[in-house]
Image (cartoon, rainbow, N blue to C red; front, side, top):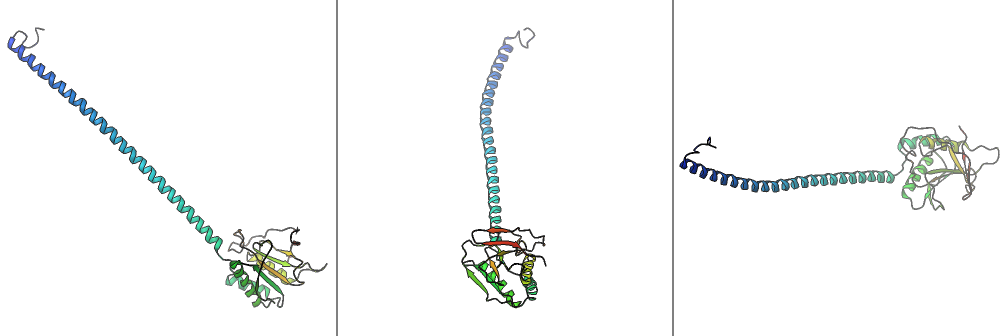
Length: 245
């Protein structure tokens, strides 16, 4: 202890002790202030953490809302396109009409009945297109009629009365069916045998618009699907394949 400064001097010892007491109080005061400031900064830290978390949550919610809005917009756009596609009218283009008229003009005077579903303006317009073409080709037609069906047909159907035994269908029927397949109006070379059709008269029935986008579209021609013979007990009709040209 004798090595401490001023150890043997009363004045020095008193002065040093007084100075140490003051230093201790200063350090204690700094300690209290530092601890208080630590609590204040801790509170501020947690407050800033809360702000950051709220910002992150807000951005996440905003991103989710944007994604949901974009998803709803895409769905609405797809639904609109689907509705527009479904509502688009079937029509024979000028090229279609010319192709069909040329094919049918080789059989002038052929009788044909054209009918569409009563209350279907889109089908009636499509039937009117066919009526206009067959009249240009010289076929015997009074135009497109509106008819009520027990079971509304879908798409276009060609009907004909079963010919007598050993008689082939008329070439006019074959030409009509082949051309309609080429134009994608019919899915296959087939005719529905219907006994209520007058002998030697062709009936063309325009039903409601089919869901199959292949029918009457601009798709490249493909090999038509084969339809086997089939009897329908409800309406007494039989679907058969037409003979090749």
